Image (tube, rainbow, N blue to C red):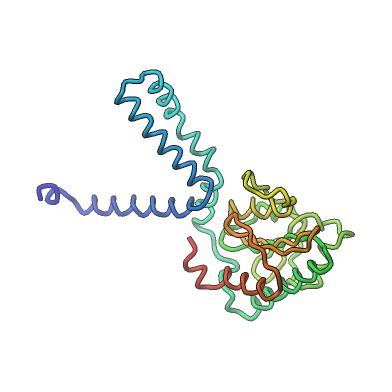
Length: 256
């Protein structure tokens, strides 16, 4: 009771703010490589306390030396998550919902174009921007500012096109750039059958909240990458349903 009497309203607000910040950080790193790294740091902290308790001076000195560089280590290890968290602060949504007719048409053209590319065994990487800006990747590509259409997708990813190897980036109902180069995933858990497009789709969606549609040049398989994970969509119906589910308003409200 004495402790409650000494509690100020500033202390309550302070605790709530710290709780919210920690909660948001945990949500951002949930399911990512950073989550496993955080567990490793926790184990290191336990080892430090055990070494102190049993007076293992050499181990204690080594761990203390590591903790002195912990800030730099955290920045290096959690660079993608830090970038994603900072990008979420203050970014506006460009493809926030599928409520308008134009956005429905855009999604349908993406679906039709992906299936057409799959039937022709033409490799493709289609990226849909959401809350996190992809400006840095757009700037290194070829600017287009064209309405999304099946015919344009087939033209861009045809082998004779000079920009067919890169990704296209869609913002709203416009293709803002083509021939964009994306970061490749560094995870070792990726199947060896995946090519550069699949690795680029995983790499981008690990660092941003973008959605990537990948068409395999070898098999014609269509996959959707989101949150650093790939899921196949075997036909037009499943591709349409999966994209609609991911990009729907209800999904956005639940998204961190």
